[in-house]
Amino acid sequence: MNVPVTNASKMNVSVKISAPVNPTEMQEKIEKAISNFFPVKLKLQDEVPTLVGEGDLESLRTLHLRLREERILDTARKIFLNGIEGDTTKFRLNKQVAYIGKLNFPAGKESLGSIHVEISAQNLSELFLVIDWLAPETIDGKPVMEIDL
Image (cartoon, rainbow, N blue to C red):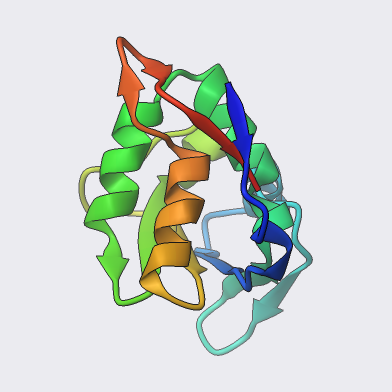
C-alpha cells in the first residue's frame, strides 16, 4: 500500500555525491558507477581529483528502486539511520560494485575510496520521511508501508 505525502512537493532535499579518482582509475568508470544510481551532472575538482555532483529528491529515485530490486531495505535503513548527523544522513557505496550496477555499503574504509553520499533535508522530520521513503521498515523483508514522495 502506497500512502502519498501531501507536502512532499514543498520538501527541500539536497543530495551531494563525491568519489575520489585515483591515478590507477579511469574517470569514465567512476562516472558510470555514480550515474548507475544518481542521475546528476558530475564535475571534476582538481585539488585532489574528485568527482562531485549535486541533486535533489528526484536524483534518489533510482536508488529507491534499486534498494527494492536488490532486497536490501533493512540493511539500507540501518545504514541511513546510523549515518544521521543533524538534518543530514551520510553513507558510502563501493565504487567497483556500483560500476556493475549493484549496491554495496562497505563496512570500513576502502583502499580506492568510496562513493560518498549526503542527503540533507530542512529538518530532522523531513529527513526521516526521506529515509522512510527510501528504505521503509519491513516485516519478513517486505515494506510495512510505502510512502510516495
